[in-house]
Image 1 (spheres, rainbow, N blue to C red):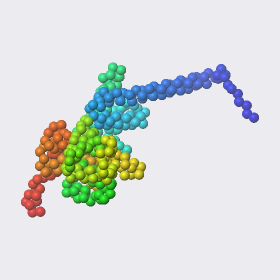
Image 2: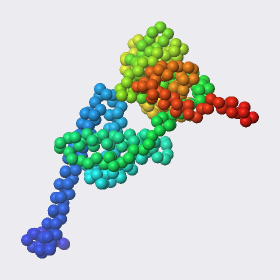
Image 3: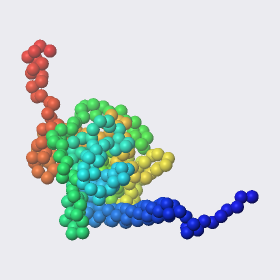
Image 4: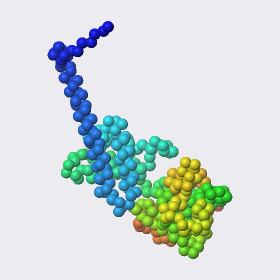
Length: 350
């Protein structure tokens, strides 16, 4: 049998006592530091929410606040993986923030570096937070974003329209004998006929509808800066949209709640629930070969220009603040088109 003796600290050697005190001090320091970091973490989270409420109040639209919230919490997660946080010294933050700003999202389908505008937006979000935080008397944080240069952005450089005739053929090929096919066809038609974004398309519900005889006026929520835009559809498109809704909800649409979704899911897990922006992108990719709804907005703009719509009409429909923006938008879309290409082909005997 093995006997166990309890040794009193008074029986320890001086060396053992020193070692014990050292270990206790280290443990106490770790606990104190851990508690302080937890408290700081709570404070930083609260600061982010306060900054968003102050700088981007609900009255200015939710889109910027939503995007900036995601960016700041994404940055925090990235920094914490390296044992850093937003309150770490500036010299420790500048390079990690620069690296984070250039990273693609983990599930991104795209490869390579992020677009210059995306990089700049991330740096702008960080700069906005630190600028606001430093205005508070209780904080003396340095702004690491000030040391980072912005990438030069050629406005609308990535704008590219689809070929209108090819889109027409692809839409015609959609099987509209099924409710899913009806949904896909009319959703893409509404996108191409209005130029609205994926967010605005996803926002549609029965409360967005106003029916006047044979036409439907749609109210789109969720535009940039909280803009609300109305579009009166062509009578043919209006009837196609209503026919789809009759297929889904029956003949009497008047009994529907205003919150009833327009674009419903046909998957087993989310059947008849509203679809989101990602599903809309998937529908676009399935039938038109592109996943960015923005390409449909570009196609809408160039088609309006080609049929002779005045620039101020295109500006209004796109929701641009000024004509110069629309001019730059259209110029970028038409930059690859040479109106004299046919004449040159004849000149050189093609």
